[in-house]
Length: 212
Image 1: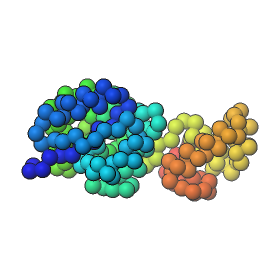
Image 2 (image 1 turned 180 degrees about the vertical axis):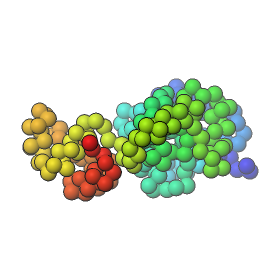
Image 3 (image 1 turned 135 degrees about the horizontal axis):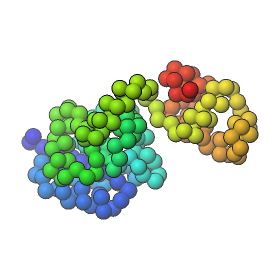
Image 4 (image 1 turned 90 degrees about the vertical axis):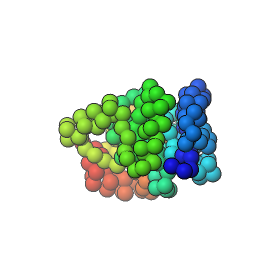
């Protein structure tokens, strides 16, 4: 490849960002164009940095990596995103790939292995760590519901009440929480489902079987 692969590194731990930058910079065909410590910083800067590849941590304090991947993938299909995590939990693997990640590697990968994975991804080849592949196969073999949305257990609980047509006050009473807490959950649900109303949320919940 004549031009260098432009890579952006996203991780909330400074040592991880520094280590990945150091290892990958040893490869002549890879250029680190920027780093970010969280999801919000990533969304603010990726258009300016113009990376070919983003290495995306999935567990961050401000935004989870799956949501960030989904947002970027909605805006552009040109950037290839590799989820880089310490975990190979099947739900996490599935969520990252459904959000638009083209690869999933674990953080214990060597610098050379990661560089090779980046090169493969640039050619259009999906790249998965062995444990991530096993987790994905296990998910499919068990017939898990493949939905394009990733909601927490609590959010799914609220979504059930939304489908039932309950108000925030009624949901708060049922769950034993404040109305402000319910309002927060509802806002997150609408954001994750990318809809603007409770009716639309209920429709998607039924369509994609997001609730039991």
